[in-house]
Amino acid sequence: MKLVKPSKKYQTSYLGYIKELGDEERYPFPLDFAYDDFDALLEKLENFALGKKMPTGYVASTTLWLVENEEILGVTNLRHKLNKQIMFCGGHIGLSIRPSQRGKSLGNKLMNLSIKKLHCMGVNQIHIHCYKSNLKSAKIIMNNGGVLDSEINDKEKIVQRYIVED
Image (cartoon, rainbow, N blue to C red; front, top):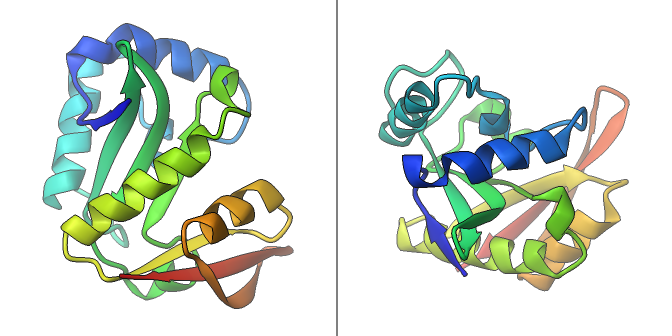
């Protein structure tokens, strides 16, 4: 199991992942990008990693896929830095596990790899956020060294802000 940069090699697996998600809200946000032109999707992800051609308010972010045996099991998006908006609601890491792979502790593994990758990128204080009602995410964050910093009301939901220090 390893983290890889998005590539054409995983197109079939990616499309299967999207199909499995169905109507559920997609996290991290790059899973909402159009994928009908896969080469354009890969280019957009690369541009985001380089901090190019991004909408106003976005920051550079790297998307990586957790793969095993050529199958995408999960997706993580790592923000290189935070602006004021995502400092309070968004954080450095967004991740998800393919629906058919949930319940196998892969979220914990992906969070651990994401934190290590950010540390390698020079991010020493990592902000990770989740809805207070998402007990599984909160547990994964705490299992990986996250300490609750604060709670924020965001559109009738409470967002918990955790910090992981290097």
